[in-house]
Image 1 (cartoon, one colour):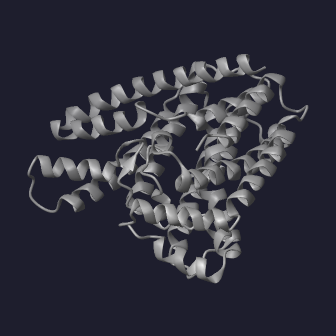
Image 2 (cartoon, helix red, strand yellow):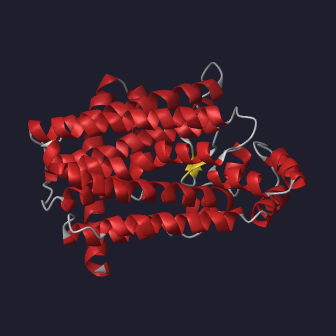
Image 3 (cartoon, one colour):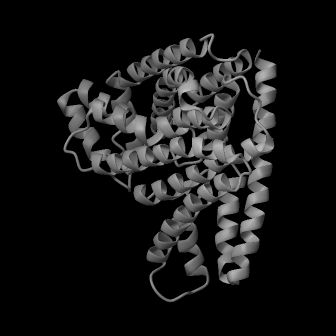
Length: 361
């Protein structure tokens, strides 16, 4: 099973990469025709989109398509690839809101354009220019995601079917992002609120909705695919939450060479994740008071990060989150075993589930 499914993953990744290269080449021609000043925009977005990325969202869309028993065409792959542009929008804006300095081992987009402003000795404030550029490039990636889907070449029926999922997915993503921003203003972390944010900010748009998008491209009648959609949700929702919980652990304990972010970056940003909320529920009052001093401190030293990590581990919250991930993964795998899902898709769903939740620290 593993070799066939792994081979499929690699093949789809290559197809997605090729579609991105083709689309971005066309956009470079268009933008550079407006003015040479836009070439750095093309360079930055090409680097952001082509140099890294697991292509998880198109892969889940591909699995959702296969689950119907159909086989995607090149036009379908192109439509699924548009999800990479939506993710680019989310990441660029997320880094700006979180004041993250890096993404995938390189300067975040707002920092990249701040540096560009300084190197070209332009007038005005470099930081403000960088922030404005990040807003606009994130918006551009969002527009491109629409455009790539609309011009993918799928039938009108498939496009209309996919748009109903596509629009809902984007609304959920923005709602989750707002809840995440608002959570920073709450006086104390809360597990239920953090789980809701994990579901809407990451889980649904990473896994559940891409699965639905793929299925909707293959089967355009909503009634015909309703039962399959429910099964895909039973797989996608718990897996999406498990995926985000793994991200939460990596954000505190992850190796920068794996995560592409500085060690303990989530601590500096003061993210109110499920891990942090569980720590505050389980730790002693003294430990909570000490940890609160570290959260959101952008000047955290390496020794303070290690101290914060120790407080989190001593609370037992890491083990609880790991158990939660395993439980959610079990639920997802059980749903993937449904006879309603084609055998070929089932193999792919199992491989995707394990790779999404068992990323190494």
